[in-house]
Length: 367
Length: 132
Image (tube, rainbow over all chains, first blue to last red; front, side, top):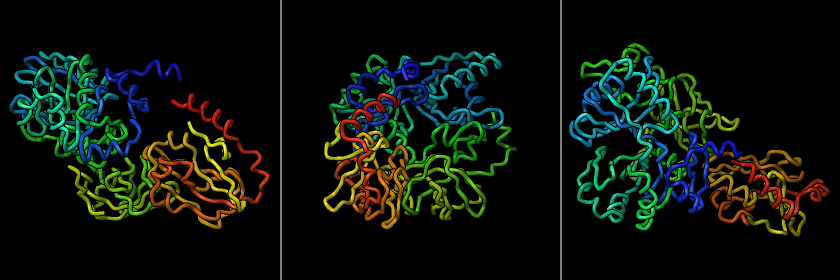
């Protein structure tokens, strides 16, 4: 145990989590809070009020230079040319030549030739190496700056913005007019109206040394600390992919409900474009709602008229009080169809649905 | 960690209480529910089912994982707790009140082989230090 723990990386908020009595777990090599007492309670706080997550294990990578825009237009499946004004953000996959997904990320336009990518913790080192190698082959005037000096706090929930403004009154004027998927730098904090919960809110990127004080300021306004457990059930209800579960190198965005993130116009050639044009998308990522008692889990088998499939993310939905899942299924399975899932040696009935299951506190599927 | 002195325990984290009529109530310990996190599902054993000591006879699922519940002694299942089936979070709130099922022991001598509170507390503490 000691060797594993010694190897775990800590975010700038590690001592804060421990002081709160968080149950700490290893996640992608990081020592992270799973919950602070009750994962379900934290989930509900975010759906009904406001919660905050330490997501400093994710990595911001600043991309700048005269060729930064063209570099990113070739690197990402979505097109940064869509990012008109500074502060605009875009969700995209980064693909291999064969169309497999290396990572999913958000890219922000910082203005001028500057962009910021925020990538997953588990893939961060590989992503940076990949970007470095692609930059080298293109010989572009591009520089990459991984920003491990930044902490990231996601404040999420219907009251998230109001409570963030209560904690930082100076932020209000600069961020009140911020529309979803836009960011602005205000008072040394990079504030974006984004998240991974299906609720409104901000993600705050700030110098690591300020992270603990910001966390305490938000807590003083009644923002509830929430761990990775709640983050996972919230994003599953919101129908959002988790890299390494619903997405990986073996699948394309077109097989993952992410065709909307692949920009196939604009006359550009991005990495993976040719494979996406020719590789048949025989599978899809569908939602499942369990019709019987039990809990669906990752990797359980699914069978249906059109063939077989597999659960990629399964669990308990606190909002629906039943089990939901994302599953990779044959393309022919339609929403509303009943399939069977092998849950602990029993084949249980589940209904295929189109995610999301829950958005902005409301259930969006028929149960 | 709480381990009531009037109960018997297993190394697999069940508790057992002998009732006045000679039947036994079975639940999971404070330590077990703490390790599992929020409990969201209980699959009860059927009344009338005969089980042998150590046999898997029920399932508890939390937000995190599924856990088999083992029969602490051999016997016949008399009843399962419908309140836990309806509201599995009762196990988190009060693990020693939220019994899962009752057994009529067929080999009462097995009871003597179970752990007492002190032995279980030591066992649970050692597992706590092992788990990551």
